[in-house]
Length: 369
Image (cartoon, rainbow, N blue to C red):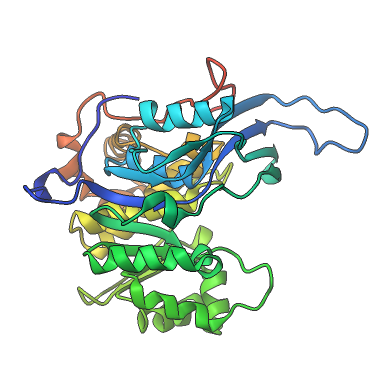
């Protein structure tokens, strides 16, 4: 994996919380097939050009956070099967995620998702059962942490989740939330009342407009900024926009021009990156730009947590952009927008963490681009 870089080193002092970010949720084993000529039809077999396997679900966010140097704790149930062994070992030993609050359960098998990529489309099949115990019972009193990343949808479905999140917030943690697609189509405005316990909210544009009953991402942002200190709306290929009421900043940044191969986990990478910048005290412009960069690096690779970038990948990208002979307006814009990385890159060790191939086999066979 490489040498760890600590982006919060200058901010650490004696008596700080042991964790930078606390996460809780379900870990899946993700099996990813790529390069399929077509989706298999009934009664047929299709060979894939590539295959990889890695921890998925909440593990996407845990890996993204850890690779960016955050001290990450994960609360999750793990099965007693080989898949559980693999996910636990990968997260703890390879990705350096703290699993002291997680548990293994006998006679409970790991949830599994099989993802098939055809062109830029994905199809998935998932199987699993509810964990033997809930998050609140697994965790007990939340440990001291600088931040918490949550899915508001999970809080709506599990009242106990709201209890531990409120407890963490009262103990000083910054709570960052996103929310998934509402398959019911109700988009209940009352869900946003949960933002009273949050520092930041990071929905995508369609989710933001649906929950706020607005017609544009900008209007949705203003509506959300009335409810939460840090409101961020991601807008796909059009970039992202945000308001930080604690600093008085309002910023929009464009997306990077990249070939998007697989969006799996890109939102998790965006969220983890924004937390890094917030905890490090960066300006809103730099935080949003950094999150846009990291998520753009992720979508150029296949496979959830496999694709999460580390500081080594970020350094490689910046040096390539900074030192290129390209004087086009776009290249010059990138150099201006990411000039703040020049102050960070010299501190990153030469062997800094880069993407790794996490796979049950010896090597992941997922095509790299």
